[in-house]
Image (cartoon, rainbow, N blue to C red; front, top):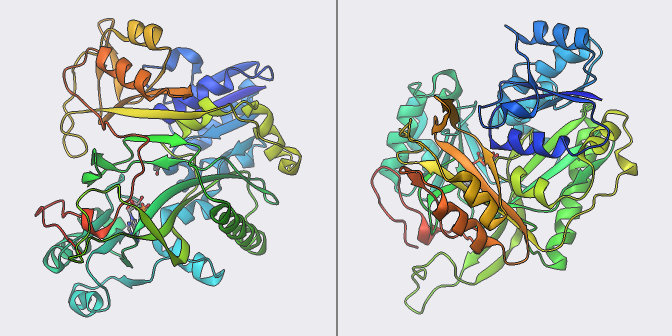
Length: 452
Ligand code: AMP
Ligand code: GLY
C-alpha cells in the first residue's frame, strides 16, 4: 500500500512509526511533517486539498490517514473521496462533532447521550441571566475551534462574566461568538478513542490525558501534558462504557454517519471527592472518589486520534495498524480483534517554557540518542525543527517521551532528565490518579480557588 499521512505533531510521528512497521506498506508519504520525523517518508505538499488529492491519485496513493482536526473540518476527506482514494477520518459534515460544540451537544440531546447540562449564548446582554442558572465553577466553551484555548473553567462569577464577555466580543473570532455554558462535572476523565467504519464501533483501550499544565492539576488547560493506557476500570464502569458505546453506535447509524475514521469520546466518570469533617474538600487532588449516581457523561467529541493519548496507545498496540485501517475502509471492522501488550504505556510531554501562551522557541535539544538508548524509550517529536544540523524547539509541545511495559515511568523521567534542553517543562505526576474537582479548581487569571 502507498499511504499518505497528513499532519506534523507527535501524534503523527507515532502514527508514522506504527504504520512503518506494517508488512502491508509499500511506501509512506507525509504531508506537513515536522523535521523530527520527516525522514520516515517522502514529503509531498500542495496548495489545497483538491490539488493534494490529484497529486496523490497520480502517484498511486491508496490510503489517506489524517491526524489533526482542521483538515477534516475543512474537507480533506471529501476531496480524496472524489478522486476515489480511501481515507481514515471523518468527512466535513461529521467532523463538525468536533468543529462545533453546539452541534455536538445537539447530537447528544437528540440521541439521549448523557452530557453536562448546558445553555447556548450569543448575546452579551444575556450573560447575567445565563450564569444565574449555573453553579460556580462553570465551564465556558467557544463553539468553534480555538487552537485548544476555547475551554475556560471559571471558579468565580466575576471571572465567568469577564471571560464570557471577552469570548463573545470575538477573542477567538467567529469561533467564540457562540458559547456553550456548561455545568462543571467532578470526577475522572477518560479518553475513549473508537474506530468506526459506518457500521461497527470498536473502542481502543481506555486512556487518560493530563490536560492541566502543572503537576497536581494546576495551571491553565493545555493540549495535553501526558497520557497513559490502559486506565484500570471496575467491571461496573466497563459495563457502563459498553452501554454508552452501544447507544453511540446506534446514533451514528441512525444519523447515517458513513465514513471510516475515529470517534473520540471525552468522558467524565462523575464522582465526588471525600470531604474532611469541616466539610471542606481535602487539599490534594488525589483523594478517594465516591462515584455518583450520575454515572458517565460525555464532555466532548473529537473526530481524530488524541494527542498525546495516541503515543502510548500505539506503543501498547500489538496489532497491525495498517491492516486495521484497511478493514475500516472495507467496512469489515467487525472482523478485527485488537491485541495489546502487557503492562501499561506512559507518555510524558516535554513542552517549552511559556507554553501554552508564549512558548520560548529556538532552544537546542541534545543528548537525545543517549536518552533513548540508556532508557529504551521512544521519542515522538512535535514542535521541533532542524537548524544548521541541530534540533531546536519550535513550538509549545516539543516532544513526547514514551515507553510501554511494567514500571516504566521511572525510565521515562530518567530519559527526560538526560535530555539537554534548557527550556523544558513537564509534569512529574503522569500515571497518578487524577481527579479534577471543585477543590482543585483555580481561576487561570485570578488564581481564585473554588474550595467547596
Ligand atoms: P473539551 O474540549 O470540551 O474536552 O474541554 C477541555 C477540558 O476541559 C476537558 O478535557 C476537561 O478537563 C475540562 N472540561 C470540559 N468540560 C467540563 C465540564 N463540564 N466539567 C469539568 N471539566 C470540564
Ligand atoms: N489530548 C486531547 C486531545 O487530543 O484533544
